[in-house]
Amino acid sequence: MPDPLGIRIAGTGRALPEKVVPNQWFVDRLDTTDDWIRERTGILERRVASDGESTATLATQAARKALADAKLTPADIDLIIVSTITPECQFPSTACFVQQALGGPPVPAFDVAAACSGFIYGLILSSYLLQNSPYRNILLIGAETMSRITDYEDRSTCILFGDGAAATILSAVSDANGPALLHHCMQAEGSGLSMLAVPAGGSRLPASKMTLDERLHYVKMQGREVYKLAVKRNLELIDTTLAEAGVKPDDIALVIPHQSNLRIIESARQRLGLPQDRVFTNIQRYGNTSAASIPIGLDECRESGRIKPGDLVLLVAFGAGLTWGSALIRV
Image (tube, rainbow, N blue to C red; front, top):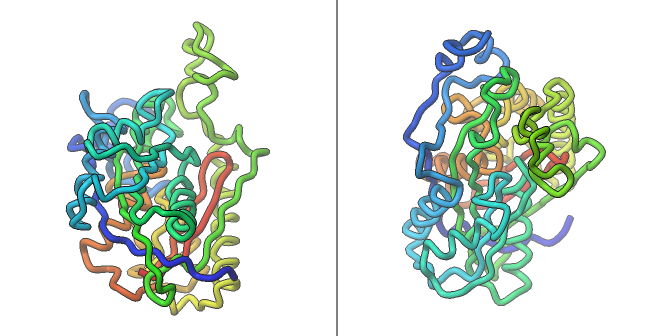
């Protein structure tokens, strides 16, 4: 196992749209039922961005809360990373919009597009940069407006997604016996890229009458195949992390998984043999917020006291790409 990378979570913050869309909204419009949605996903409601809200506005709100929590100013931030698959526009990066809105001095700013695994990808990258560069404080944000790429005529996918953002400020720590990234894994398997994708809008299929008519600018998902692979990869991630880190399930204070499906989360919990209160879920209230789901959970857990200094926390995600990743941190 690599040496621990000394990092500290200096602050967190989240931003969620005020608009709540309950399951009944879909029941009134589509051939579905509240019971069907609950049984297959665990979702009761989700948040949806209104006019005037966007990935960048939510990311900026979350960033300001994280800065306040860390008692830092934009001038203290050395790098901004936004993990998102629903960027403000094709270019420039959403991170540049956040940098402008925060009003700090010029700093590097870029996006990471790894779908639901994006926050973990960004966390691993940030940890190495904090240990091997002049950067002392990195602002890492997971932000999504999935409603902008959701086809509300597609019963199989539209019930799944919600909008939101959360920010984490990571700071360098010289003593690796303190807060640290203890173990990490990130992988991708491009052979499964067509299982979960927005086919049009890029250079492969630029916007045209055909792409609009066929609704190719919305999420397309092979639900059953994605579900099976998500369960498989999540269990493999957990087994690999525990074995390589030399950690037993009882050593983990809390697991914060990507909130994709309650049944997938339950399969991971059962593999670990942990009680329900040691595996965090908020999918019931927010749905699948892609790269935002893990940092939203992290902020909620810090705020409520569910994780405390010295705790071991396991983050696990699987998403489009296909991508997956895990991070074992000591907070």
